[in-house]
Length: 443
Image 1 (cartoon, rainbow, N blue to C red):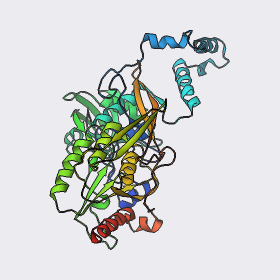
Image 2 (cartoon, rainbow, N blue to C red; image 1 turned 45 degrees about the vertical axis):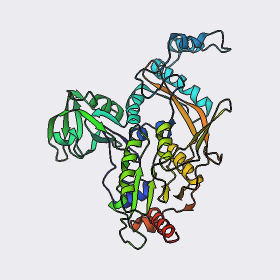
Image 3 (cartoon, rainbow, N blue to C red; image 1 turned 90 degrees about the horizontal axis):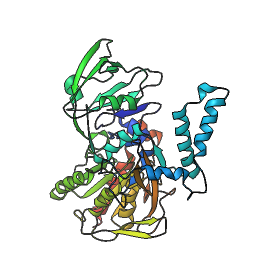
Image 4 (cartoon, rainbow, N blue to C red; image 1 turned 180 degrees about the horizontal axis):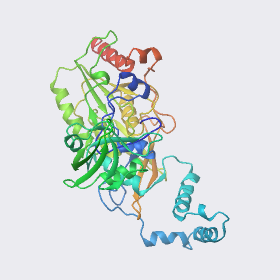
């Protein structure tokens, strides 16, 4: 996430090409800037399907129908929510500063007030525009032009951070630093990142006209034909481009897998990488989940199961204190030793993975205590196109440790110092290499 800017994308994004020091400061490197990170609350969520319908796969989940909306005035409730409408009418008619009474804003404030009263950061209302942008990321693909954008402080326009390699944006001539002045003839002045993305995204094969101002001040009308943009959720490229040990020597016999988030496509991507790992001459695996905000529950447990033959993966505890235990079956890569690197931004699904492999004796965890998000959320789409994320369960680690507000405690804690940053040293990866090499020597 960029400090003091809004950021979003029209396709999968790898973070800005920068120095390793940027990675060290932010705890991220060559990171996939999924919209989950941009939308705020969605940055740290693990979701599971509804007991009735799969809210991610179906275009029109259960939602809220008229009978549900009648709950506001239902005699079954001790509170008459219809009073909110009465209050709004009085304010509109009598409040001394009528320009401050904007019904849509007041409506949103009332909704947000209900969630604030719960004092649960994981249960929230997501407006239609934000939900429209975020839901595609659970699939790992959407249709757009393939470019990362932000809106600098003080700017009236959204700017291109970078077009993605081999994307429609790159092919059409969109360049780093381009300012988006118009979209299909409409001025983009004052648009938020969300507004710009919603206008630029569209069906595969359809064109969009962008009037852009290049860094040299020249303006150009560029037509981009939209395509399906896939969001790779894993990478084998370590920070700095290669693995190096504490002496600065390149290490090529340790497999490095970075998991940026858990989407529909992640298990398939991991499975393909593990086939290569199992066929290669590797002595161990580094799983890097730094900055990983989580994602889908089923896909997360599928990936954990790839590294286990037996044992508990996670324990879910619902509102009635009923427990659901998810256990491992025969895995695909259970021989090579594993070290997991995490940081304070590793949350939700990444914590589930780290705790499950750590407590089953399958991996050591290196880095910093993780974020501490041990809640399972259910997505309920609303009639207005928005959604409610509801905390429906807490989850416990195999040893029944609570993750919520505690996080996963690393076996070996390693934090970056200013000296590490100045020297562009990834001390967490270096420690992971040393641990794996020592394990092999002691076998």
